[in-house]
Length: 316
Image (tube, rainbow, N blue to C red; front, top):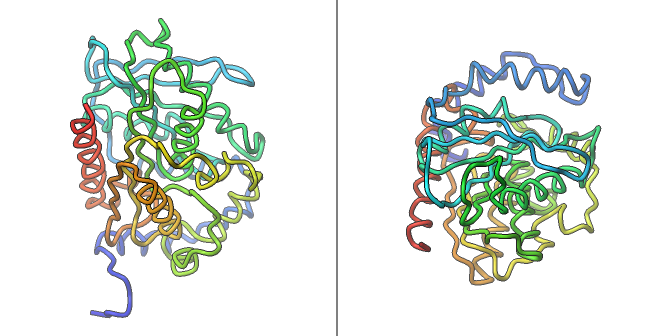
């Protein structure tokens, strides 16, 4: 065993070898629509199917530039007042949608036995920053009001999401901290999020190549998203930290974004927030969407959801 290299699981190594052999074009060299189609087409081969649920219903929230598409998932046909999971998908702010995260959202709703609404926000480069956080905040505020279309009485919100969606989940939480909605944010659960500028972090160089998400891909995403580094909605480190609701934060140990998640978790701890931090050893960025190709990643998702259950029980 090479002890100079960080631990990598066998199924992760096999998946990365398969990806390396695919000879995929550089993401920045093809039209954005082709990138989206390639990412969507991969889901069948890398993602576990989700369970059947009692309720799967498409909705739309009023947004700043028109309706924001939503999808409600609930393992129960009827339920009393309860928290609502607000799921925000990843994809580098340029790809991803409700359909590509359908299986994952079904699994999360079923495991937590809570209603979940998946948010489909406007994507860059057609709609650069701050279109995504504006759509997500508008959707969250609408859902907090228990609109009749939802058919559920909401007692509190739980923003969660992965990668770009993890960033947006935190940004939504911070926006709702500054201007509280009809019900409080009970907890947030960002998964391998971007939370601050990446260049200074060792992980951004250490895992720049060969671990699925590459530095060049992140540079392309950042170019498309065109964020304003002075706007608190760009990086959660710029937003309010003190008073952040209980947080479950997960990172992957072999992820160029790993240290960004660590930095945000550290800031929360130093501010005295309730934090559960999980760093999944031997795994890579994107693992909640690759649970068919990386079987061990399913246990990682269940560990995150278990931490969320424990947090909800503690704060109830």
